[in-house]
Every structure is written in C-alpha cells, then in structure tokens.
Length: 149
Image (cartoon, rainbow, N blue to C red; front, side):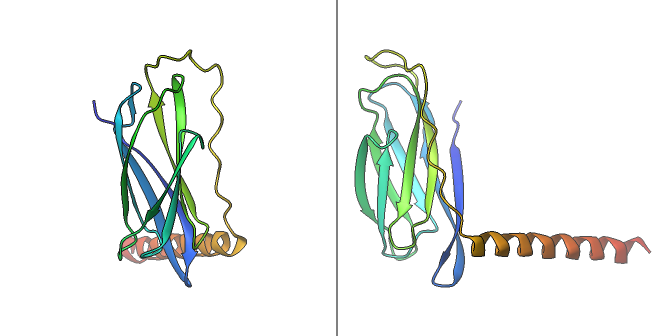
C-alpha cells in the first residue's frame, strides 16, 4: 500500500499568500530506501534548505521558476522510528514538514521520537486566514439561505 504524508504551511511571499507543500514517497521503508521529496509553493528561484532525519543531515536546493523543488534522499543508518523531513524557504522563512517512518535498521529502535519543529505563523497571516475562512463561511451561509426560500 502506497501512502503519502503531506504537510502544508501558509506564508506570505511578497504580499501574496502561498501554500508551501512537501510530499515524500514512499512514506516508510527500511534503512537504504530512496525517498523522493517534492515541494511546491516556495519562492521562485529561491534557496531552499532541507533538514533530513530530524536535522541529522542537511542539503541546499534551489526552487525552479515556479517555486517547485525536487530531491531524493537515502534513509541513513538511523534507528527505527518516525523522522521529520523539514523543508524551509530561506527567503520567506516558511517551513513545512513531512514525516517518514524507518521500519528496519541496523541500529536499535528509538524509545522516543523527537517532535518535528512547528513553523511559527505570523499574526498577520493568522488574522488573514481567519478572515478568509470567515468570509467563505458567510458566503456559503448566505448562498444556502438564498436558495432555501
């Protein structure tokens, strides 16, 4: 069964709100698995940092002209457990996380898995997200009320 983990972060990019998304495939596997990492919604041609396996490995990527990134990573010799793959847009500071479960390893099983870092959401973005959601809900309510008579 193929499973994908998708996490998104809302952030502001030059006054425009964008949705950064990162997807890993497969979502689990043993040590040595090649993982495809794809992201979208980043700053076009911007510098992107990947923090793999809870920050034990890093790499720098460049987003294409559409704000997309793509990379592969091989699961290193880490203990079994769930690991964060954090992708950060250096220009905007936006960060999004995908999780990968290591199912078999030559190392002992971890007893605790560190929680992935949660990106901070600026108050401006939070207020705008609430306003957008509230406006959409009000429009749906008015539309339903108009058609109910």
